[in-house]
Amino acid sequence: MDPHVLKKDFPVLDDQTLVYLDTAASSLKPKQVIKKLDEYYEKYSVNVHRGVYSLSYVATELYEESRRKVSNFINADFEEIVFTRGASSALNLIASSYGLNNLTSEDEIIVSELEHHSQVLPWQNVSNITGAKLVYVPLNKEGRITIENLKKVLNKKTKVVALNYVSNVMGYISPMKEIVKLAHQFGAVVSVDAAQAAPHKKIDVKDLDCDFLAFSGHKMLGPTGIGVVFGKKELLDKMPPIEFGGDMNDNVNLYDASWKDSPYKFEAGTPPIAGAIGLGAAIDYLENIGMENIANHEKKLKDYTVSKLLEIEDIIVYNPSSETGIISFNIDGVHPHDAVTFFDGDNICMRAGHHCAQLIIKWLKVVATLRVSFYLYNTMEDCDKFIKSVKNARDFFKSVGF
Ligand code: 7TS
Image 1: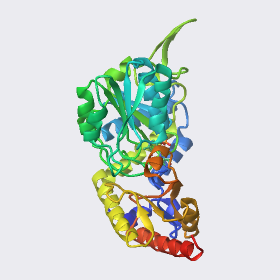
Image 2: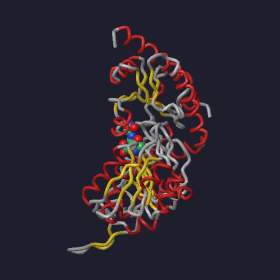
Image 3: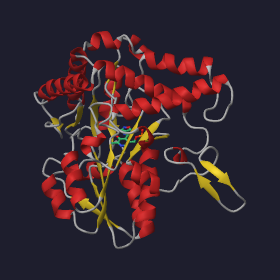
Image 4: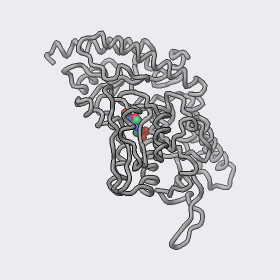
């Protein structure tokens, strides 16, 4: 893959001075995806599953074809894919439907300080309502989730293990296959937050054997407003809906109603039709390049950039050993929000803050970090521009007494 060629697919990058290093927040969108969205809105922008006319059949077919693409993308079965509004609503669905209906005060839920708020807060809510105990797997010295530490907290009371596959702050890949295997030995179900994994690495839910998995479309070249829950069919079938309304029901009586089978019972109301269709186009684009090529490219950029960063005085990198394209760092003595404003002046987009993962920021004992995250459209030239800007920022802030 040649990122210089790929860049041309991304209209935002028509501004050739722009360096986009904030894919972990949201990726840019290629024209192939934008075209597919335009096509939906221009040619068949009608509702799905209800109209008995040709246009509605077309929209329904494309919406369901995207479900097929998503299921193939992660090696799930078609009925195991529920469309949601994003990873956050996907993770909330899992916790609210499975957690609130299966856990009691006798039970334990394992999470970690490496989680995004969207993974940990829904389980905090389940814990508060059911009385189930929230247990944190201790992180190792680097801030990683390890099997050794998981063994210390897993026990017969553990009913749920809810962890990230790739951390949005540290970029570490959790040993998910081993985590699932171990959790299953204790009879726990595993809910995987794959928001930072699905865009960057091949996922095979059958091989992982995870029970649930969630991700967003907008971090993987797709539109905003679309996310995915994968759930094993036997679990989804037993879980109640958490939203009620049109299209998710079968028979409705005065005081009760029955639901469609999963996944449809979880998709109340008009679903994100354009979002799903756009996500299908994004998956086509990613598969065309190959997930392994994308992962290798990002790792190469990250290794190069970390090695250059470490040559600069006063730079602290928190995750030099990360296996993915995420770098968290600071300029010693400089608040990340001041630094990021400097980078913006060089037309470099990146994020500063707690990245919606305050627990790991507290664990690192810092107020915030700067974060770079690479994707398939980033080049070595982007890395060099970024490094130059970091050097200038460091020199500037030191010269004014930071
Ligand atoms: N889980 C992880 C690991 C994430 O990184 C994010 C978003 C989410 C869940 C939630 O996804 P959403 O699409 O519902 O927002 N992470 C980030 C980030 O790192 N910077 O901005 C959003």
